[in-house]
Length: 551
Image (tube, rainbow, N blue to C red; front, side, top):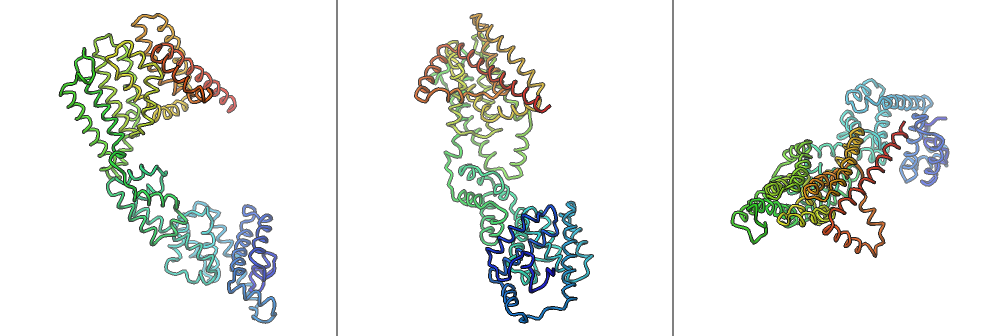
């Protein structure tokens, strides 16, 4: 069959009449596609795809379609080319297909401009070179074609300046392919020109306030405005083919979003005020009640100084730093001892305060330490939502019984359980999942940690049963570490316990738990440790089962 004849191609390839409509062309292609898979015969599939695209263009009203229909009804309306011309065209097409299929089969050469130059340099026949160029252009329509290959083809073949011959051959296919090629080139140029704005546009989409907050960094807002203007006016194909249009609309809204000072500095203001309160109370007389009526100008100065330093630091790290400085800051935050070093300091200071013999010295040192740890964690992980932080802090301070224990033993240290709760909220929100992933990659260390946990659980019960003050202090110091370690050794399922209770009774259960936590904190500590022990055992069973399955 002469698949290149102007009278029969591409209709003979599809097995349909020359006057077929678009629906018939699509049905024929779908039928043949089931018989001819690209992974079985890439050359035949390329020929089929080429014929389908051309027939679809002709069926939609192209000039070639008109010629084909006329030639089918009037036998001698268009003179047929001589047989040797058919043979030359057929040989050129076959040679081009073979050359291109051999080239794309070598994956290592697809992104090399030199290999493309060598490929077209060895082709001296003009018809074969034209067919090879068309095969390369059609290949650019493939979704899995590397963007570097498209850009290199455009550079080697000069499509930016000379593509008229491709559009004359098939305007629809050439336009689709060239749009994709030029979109890749423009996209790469925009990434080099608007580095910071493109990083935001390609990254995960934050909330609207967080996006507006990100635009406040030095130069980023102006760069984003220029990028969106350039995309809208000059590069719509980049938005259509390479970018997510929803993200473009999102960052357009962020440019018009006016973020208030309260939303920008609200979390930093609240946490800095809390840290200032801890520092001020720690600077008071050890034997004082640490209430506001005992404050002197010194405590007020400490509070105001903490507010000023924290707000200036927050503004400097979130707004004033340039993008390279922001990248260096992110690298600094990823250093292990800086990212997690506050955790042992926090737990050690809380345990030391629980073991204070009544002098108040350890409590004052612990207040300063927990205030520093709070600012440390905020600078590493960012400022969390105040509502979420307050709920988790209340659970860590009251729900585990720390507030009840401290108020019954040392009411002057009423800030300590809540300072511990705030840091527990940071740990639960940011660091706990990361520590759990780190431990999951070290199964031997996980087994050792679980063994130490159960030894600590037995020790906790023994110390609480002795009922003397010193043993109780050591028991609560131990429980401080266990409450944090339990969430790392196993997935704690407090929310599942809440869902077990019918909705009507949940409020009453919460009130009963709160009353026990304030009046009988030792019972709450034992119950909490017991529940975490059950979850750790289940985690160990699942880990052992997965190991057996893997073997």
